[in-house]
Length: 119
Image 1 (cartoon, rainbow, N blue to C red):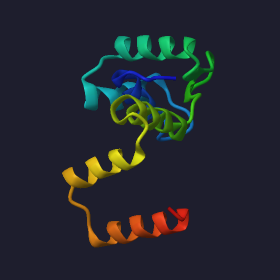
Image 2: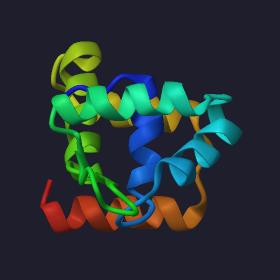
Image 3: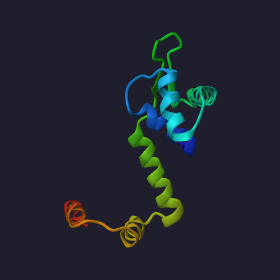
Image 4: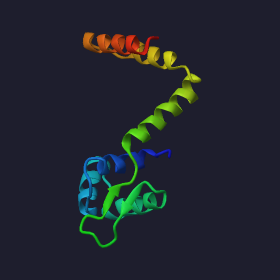
């Protein structure tokens, strides 16, 4: 499942809780994306057809996530790793570390993770 940027925005709202009304989803996405009720409804129904969203037609709060955020994030990471870094996790991590400032605690955590992996 490869989510578009718009689908990520919808899913981020749905991952915040268990069930939502159309108004609740629309209010959150209006403040983020400026989308109106029709746009949000269109995304939700399209995403239901893809299996990403569950819609209980007659429920007061019919909309919920049908996929897990961690699964989507893992797929995105794997795609980035293979597409951009040819599968080299070391190159990916090195690129992030060169371009980002990290705290001493983060460095210590990375060292511990590497030690625990016995790399």
